[in-house]
Length: 485
Image (cartoon, rainbow, N blue to C red; front, side, top):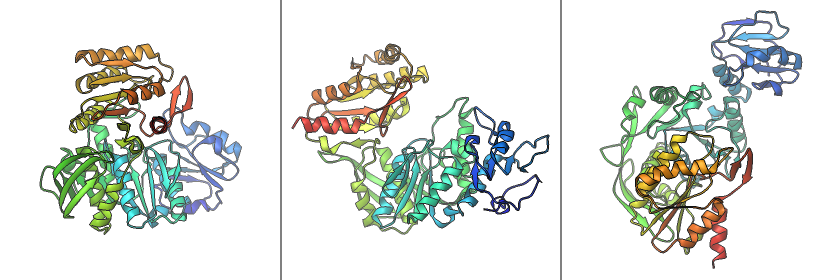
């Protein structure tokens, strides 16, 4: 592609050299540069692409996009812009011939629930006969094909490459999780969301490497709505008006007047379902059976329903999809083990999410609530105490086991969890091997108990001393349940 075409939408400060040249590839990783490449110099956390300019030109790059103009003359064309991350997003869209403009793009942002809501939305759209792409925490999906992603919201070049592949595969819609980091790092720059939803907001991702304050985290998420045509918001979140100011908003709620409201919410628990039944009024009027538990999943379902309504999908299609929905690693009921017990897998791995999960499960009034968990190594020590505190307050028994210990000492991890457990006198048992811990929990599970396996969720590995070993909690539970027949 001609360089002049790739840079049409850039805010250019200065150009040195010709733009009437052919580009063979767009790169932001210097090791991938080849003859004819355009190299975009990104200032990263660990390295600055500007330091590699001489190297990439030696490798064959014919053009570079920079924020800082080189002091020496170069043999390659130099394009200076205020923000190379933003430039990468616009160049990437052009390189793949603007595929997002030919898709219906749906964006979801919030602290919790993005993955679940994305799957709900995808399932409803598919029930209506569409082929749907999805991008988020658990990977990218092109219909049923799953691809690995490094980030919840991938770098802009990868993002547009996924859009291109989705379009070429016949997808008409894409549902994507839009993270605060993705917005902060301009990965979605230039992208228009046909529909965008705000789920909720609470302090998270606040650290020197992520967001310096809650206010920065909040305001990064808010940026999505300046790029959104139709905005949907959870009106039960105290931040919804701040986040969506300046937009016309479709609201959902379980608590107050809204465009779509859920009421008469009741829990449903039997061998095949751990979920909720509720009535809706407003955009839709009728009764919904949701095959996922908890009021937070009712909120997620309302967002997905409002999106469906905005796309002209009828109530019967929505109802059918929500009755069947199951999201890997998100309050996932293992139905294949239903005659052995009620077993839930969930990705909850911080105190807030575990507290919410346990309180929700207690609402089903189990005889015992058993929690199987560990805490990842090489992470904040306070999280271990906080998780122990939450477990001690709400679980009848905690089975402590490995999560992703990485290079950390297990005895230290357990002692810090136990310190929190002891505040409430929480009962616990240590079973070092996670597979053994799963078997133990299933062996002691009785009728009317609920066992929650938390922390791993959709992950299919354990990270131990720098090696990722295959580990599927879902597979282990199903196989052990089958062996008991």
